[in-house]
Image 1: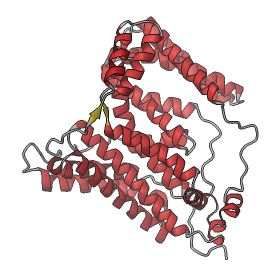
Image 2 (image 1 turned 45 degrees about the vertical axis):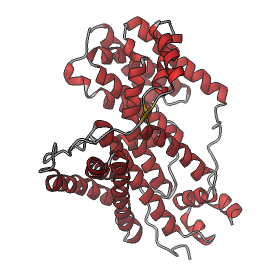
Image 3 (image 1 turned 30 degrees about the horizontal axis):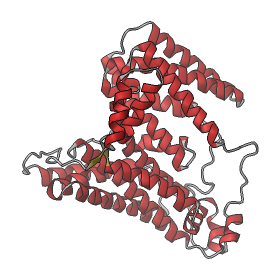
Image 4 (image 1 turned 30 degrees about the vertical axis):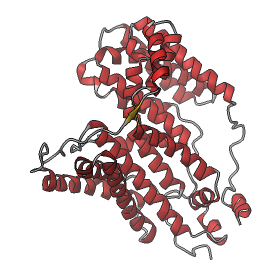
Length: 418
């Protein structure tokens, strides 16, 4: 059955000329990025560009977004659009706040995950069983979840010590790990401020120093999703529900069951992302997600519905968010970095024959470069918006040959192929 399904469910051949880059090419690309970062760091005098503190902050900002993007990928690979990620993340933040201050951070994580899963299950019931339009169901969840979380917050947190109508009492952070010897050696090299070498050491040190176990869990979930969805019969069947559900059903796959599993797991991942936000910041707060569910959807699309790509998109947002936290001077250096990135995007788009996108990216790249050289700082009002602007510009203009699941968003009834 599995062999037949692999042919029929994945009947659309890959685009011609599309090749996987060898590992050596990826290493070269990463080295080139680090060289550009080092050069900009030296030229602009912005030590925060490659510091270990920036990498640590970037990880903290990237994990909730990566979980939201992973949640969207699970649902859409099974053919269900999940616009309700934002609302499910909100449920996760409340769940972490409710259980976290009473029983500890890991209880908060579990409770946030469960509330997110309930949100995903509600979306599955509406879309899979009753055939409600996926967008309408997702928007309804996004409208209901914040109101429900605020109501429950007023009900449970108003009289709690350290709580309030819009926030929970304090939550202890999850455990963090450090590799002592390696962290110290990398720190010594980072402090030398050598070109490239210290930059690499600083970024590596951020990955081995005071890393939350929740970050490790998120990395394992992304890697596990790669294995489960692309290297097991379960993953093949789940993806077939988004590609060719009629063919999958004819081969004995219970399409409804796999859609339910995928969308419920999607809600659980989104809830986990919300729980990470609450635990890492020390409490639940109203409006804590700040649109990260929607940025997660953008990262998922940029990643072509694949875990590795969405992790890259989430990392980009996390990095720019970390730079914004460093202040106006760091964001000013980011203007030059963004200008260079957009010029590179323009060249790549030109080589791909996308002349309009190439022109837009090139123009914006020159514009950001001019902004950097003609100013000394970025207005304080724009610093907080920098992560969203940078992420959307790069994700939008660096578009590729996107291939969403063929049956995504389409209504499906059991037995409709008979």
